Image 1 (cartoon, rainbow, N blue to C red):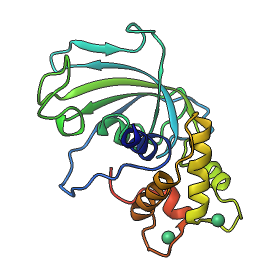
Image 2 (cartoon, rainbow, N blue to C red; image 1 turned 90 degrees about the horizontal axis):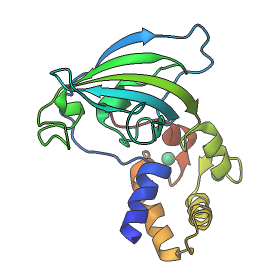
Image 3 (cartoon, protein in one colour; image 1 turned 180 degrees about the vertical axis):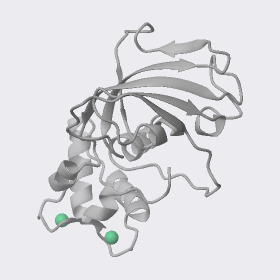
Image 4 (cartoon, rainbow, N blue to C red; image 1 turned 45 degrees about the vertical axis):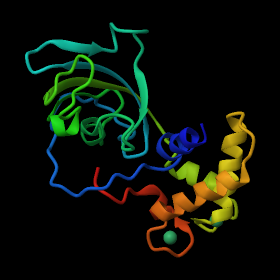
Length: 211
Ligand SMILES: [Ca+2]
Ligand SMILES: [Ca+2]
């Protein structure tokens, strides 16, 4: 569970899972089906999005619809941290609340050679996705300010450790000093790009490698 927690925190709650590899990447084909007249903010990396989605195989079969399957509710996810397939991370940026898009996603940005469940290997997928709501994610400006206890616009190791301690507490886990230290080490190895011992707001907010 310790490993799970670690991954959980690094990947979904706090910091990004950085994936290696710099191969030229396939592209998502994006078609805007509807864009609302009023747009207060546009989705960006690190935001949390609530979406309705329908997924289709190449032969036109629908393999999933959030409107008719399961609890019929739209789903929340964080944009840009590989919580979803790469094609979504790439294709759902700069969207307004209420906007609807059609994404055509090549297998390399979806479920690849293996496929998954109803999705055969090497499938190009088509999604119709509607953004219902956009919220600040853990990588937002607000989250940074919350972590930056002394307001010097950079996160020290102690500030990150304190944040982890609070997050553990919030989720009902006992504090674990050794684990926190290791997590901090790992986080700084990935996030402190210029190795000055602090995570600047820029290092925190912007993604380093291409999605
Ligand atoms: Ca600070
Ligand atoms: Ca730094």
